[in-house]
Length: 232
Image 1 (tube, one colour):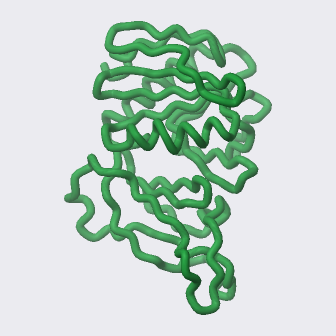
Image 2 (tube, helix red, strand yellow):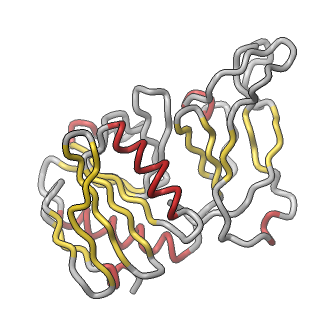
């Protein structure tokens, strides 16, 4: 998960969303005024549709299609179980780890796989939209001109102290429910990696490594990850 800051939000209508659509949820956009000066080590902004309907409106959960009506302002937006999650662009340390791990995975994957790095939407049939930092997908699920629709074989989240609990709870439960076979959590601060594998519908830890230790992955394909090398 990317480094985040608190985002003051206000309810606004998406510029391209038809005003006559009385069932559309409130699209929440960050209030950018003064936010650049805020600390980056706070929880991600998470919003839900209002519980009480406004006159002429029936609230419903957010869906991935709502994102298509939002102007791209550099913020990452995900829809998870009807909630809109907004986070700003990542800092260098985060992106460096994403690049190093993604490059290694791309260099070593055998035929039949593709490796993708954020920002790239995965849109499962549940109507959600997720952006893992790194994804490994089947080659037949590769969509070079659009969103990823097939379930990834592996997702990786690079976390910060502020998002560790979120990655270990909300994200973990959702990836588990959606049938992602492997879920890795990488912490640049330690540095470390924890690997989870789906067994009988639940994640179990299959490996971890810290610093110069090696994690030997066998799924979705054999690869060795040394956490300290990801932050070099």
